[in-house]
Image (cartoon, rainbow, N blue to C red; front, side, top):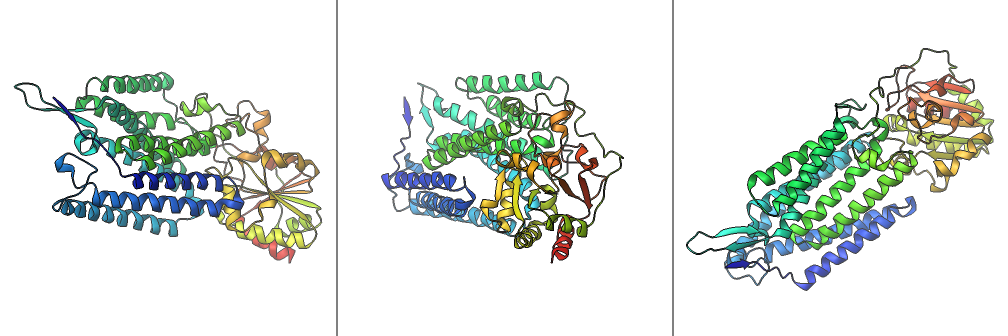
Length: 502
């Protein structure tokens, strides 16, 4: 005899989750443009508030009747005690997590935002793994099991076949997201080298591991033994590690976007296990948008999408080992830069990670305002992968209240450098390196770069000549005749230029 738990969520709960999902869709639409990004953030917060409050209400009023065999039903007198305990546990968890998030959000610097994003992705992945493990260990509580009672035998709890697939996929994707995000965090935070770490026969190992995971998930439908479930989990943790370590620093923004997609699919898979439509909608939105963004960024970098997600396919061991070249270069001062820019008709400012490190965005905007008062036309050129995550430079400039109509993407402004008097590059090393167009041995070869070398004068702000970019290679632009190196802290140098302009 088989007995299954039937889930019948109240209609208003489904409606509330649907409204939350619509808010998330509108939030994504708002975030697609700097002009509407604040409204998009607000809409997303409203949607999340609706989803959380609905879940809390359901936990209090509908989780209690579990002992009677119905997860969503009409509570009885004794059920409120169980519901109250569940509510207290949820509120305590929210308070702890919310407190950590609030403190982190208030203290985190923009320079650490990429690694923070990677860390958050890892938490989403681990949450999916823990939910999957809880569902596996107590499937009746999740309403995904039937109790089989053979004649003259003790009852056997069998997880529904479709739930085994959902559970296996959710745990696998969550584990990959967790371990991959941990490696990304270590690379971004400087605890681990940003250059590719290439294992022998890595593609064969990766392919074999992935096929093993998929085969075990298929076998899990027939056999729900613990060794199958936990082997899927263990192999998934391993493949997340193996997929990310071969990816070099130049491709790290794509990795962040890709891991964001993985976290969404993990959440969606767990949404099926929890019978939570809000998680399914939200996870699908995050997963699909992250995948699309990763594809767009790969196209912008002239990278193969499949090659990147397959674990740095095509990476070479030599990347990241270069040092600065000892060659003559032209050094200038803040006064020299101010004079050149004051005499220019157009100045294009190219922000990079160096601006983020120095927190120089406000000084850059002040410099631009002074130049505009002198009648100089000022524009900003943004490379899609400048910084350490998608949109990193756009966020920094928005923080400094730079007008959106002055900010241009690579494909919209690259043709203007040849008619520009001064290009002011502030810490954007790899995305301005001409080697991407000429040196086939370079790890960034083929990646579209900003054509700053075509400007009449290129002013390059760099802390010293001893360092190299995140991809680990020197920039030949430093040694060209039309380049003037402004060595020093980016914020201090820009502030000195502002004084000279005044």
